[in-house]
Length: 229
Ligand code: CDP
Image 1 (cartoon, helix red, strand yellow):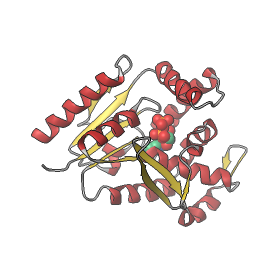
Image 2 (cartoon, rainbow, N blue to C red):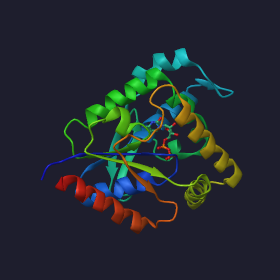
Image 3 (cartoon, rainbow, N blue to C red):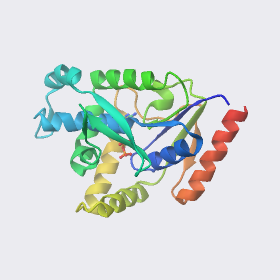
Image 4 (cartoon, rainbow, N blue to C red):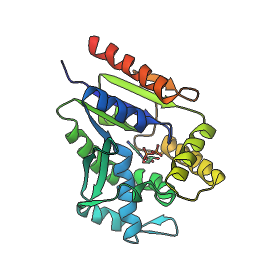
């Protein structure tokens, strides 16, 4: 059977990665979370004092890009890949609210995007890949056979993020999470380079009122349709 490329884009915390990793497991594709890569760059910047009082030391970060090696290793227990920075597992550290609060300005920098897109395109060379993010169907894989644009209301997305962080035992405040979701939506859709937008040929999925199982079925049908055509 031919192996296609599947691009899933959408707003923050709308469940893209859950649907992408489930489909990947079901059809035996590789799943790549492109947001994890931008989060890892933001984590590196925070760890190396390249962000002070919310301001990014752009020259410092530009020079450091060659020292940031991002890789993924499949974690069978979680059923999805864990993210590594220079060989060290950073999967939990990149998901904290601190990283969420700094990632979008880092991801808006041209030299960061150029490097990440180059690595993402290399990972997808062979097809058989599902990648989620903000610019996958528009910039990374404009020729992807299946493109999906996921959306849900900000309140529902903030609630999902709150439940996720609480389940991990991280103390969090609903208002702060909603503010973060709305702020990232704004930066992601208004930045100059590869802003988040729906590709013209993307299928739209509003999953505000879908269960995980319903969303899974929807996606599987979209995949079947894409490979039959
Ligand atoms: O998981 P969540 O939806 O909160 O976000 P993510 O997918 O982990 O992405 C984190 C941030 O990275 C986003 O808010 C974007 O600013 C940036 N990002 C991007 O610019 N381009 C991508 N392809 C993926 C993420």
